[in-house]
Length: 87
Image (cartoon, rainbow, N blue to C red; front, side):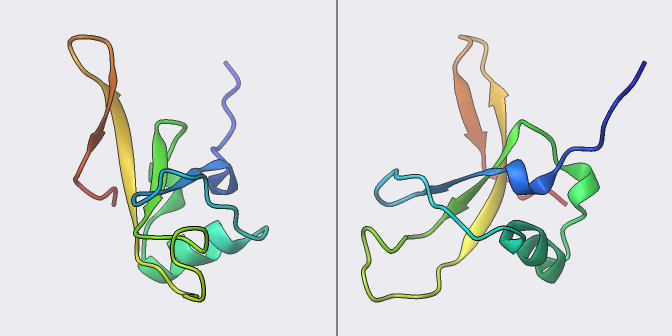
């Protein structure tokens, strides 16, 4: 069986305030994860990054805190965010 390592650059990034997707430059996700001490090898397609604001809803601001979350299915079959950071 062939399995490929997940590319952290494929993580979806969304603003928690306005719900818009946040677009970063190539390599930004990998750099931010490394800076935060998060092992990219622990991430997969069920993970996403949530930003506490974005340039759309907070124009002029250049920096926003972020959190990596892992999505899971509830008993009802809906996706839910689990608040614990991924390490």
